[in-house]
Amino acid sequence: MPFRAVLPALAVLVFGAVTADATPRDHPLRSDLTIVDPSPWASNGTATAVAMAPAVLGGRPKPEFMYGRLAVQDGPFDGDDMFYLRGKRFGLGTEKVNLSRGALGADSLASPSFRRYTFAFGSPSSPRTSFGVSYTYISSSDDEIDGLASIDLGLSGRLSPRYTFHFTARNVNRSRLDESKLARFYEFGTRGVFLKNKLGLFAQWSVVEGEADDGGLGVFGAEVRRGSSMLFRGRIDTEGNSGLGTEFLFSSYSLGFHYLFDDAWKSGLFTYLRIFAGS
Image 1 (cartoon, one colour):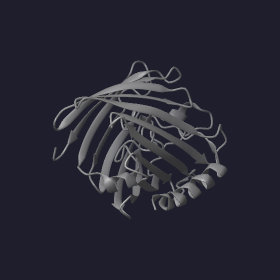
Image 2 (cartoon, one colour):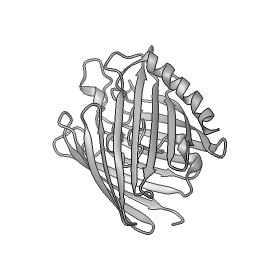
Image 3 (spheres, one colour):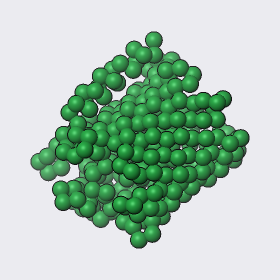
Image 4 (cartoon, one colour):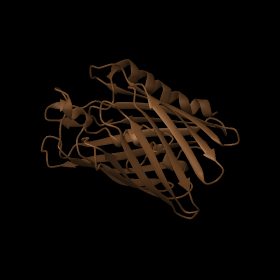
């Protein structure tokens, strides 16, 4: 029964939600580019090796390459970029961040520039579920965060031909910064497809363990397919950020544009190229 596979993930999610009281962004192990991630999972903790949760790799049929770059006029994130390569059971990637979102807060962790490297593996654990693990490492000229590393665990599955879900627990190893242990992140998302796969709806909720803020981050969105050559995407999160994008599909690659509306952090355009092997 697929629902039995969901129960462990829900139990961990509930535990994480009870012990969590912060939004997931003010943290160097957290990806900033996830706010423009073109993936329909659209807010995973790292947008590099797996724009989706690592466990989803266990069910991917073909390898995929992606490179994207963010342009923000007069904003701190101008020039941030991401690259990943993911296959049926593995993923690897890197992501440059010019300035952490948390760097502007008094109690936040700051770095003028750093790069994340992520390696992930996913494998089917049953006909309808897969399990994944990923490792993220930070390299920076800032000695305070250079060498930070996170181990993530994930579970994904198919509830029916129409509905899928994923759960990820990030930083399960509780990375240390000086003498302090950094928080864990918990994410749960679901996606449904309708109208003969022309409409996709998704939602995800993320919470952080052990920090004081306002409780979590929800992301909601839709993906509309027009014929076989174009996708339209829109999303909004509970912090008021939103985005609209389109992706042009070709036989073996696609080109996408996603515009982020974010008054607090400067709006910007994320441009990306995806190449599909074996298409």
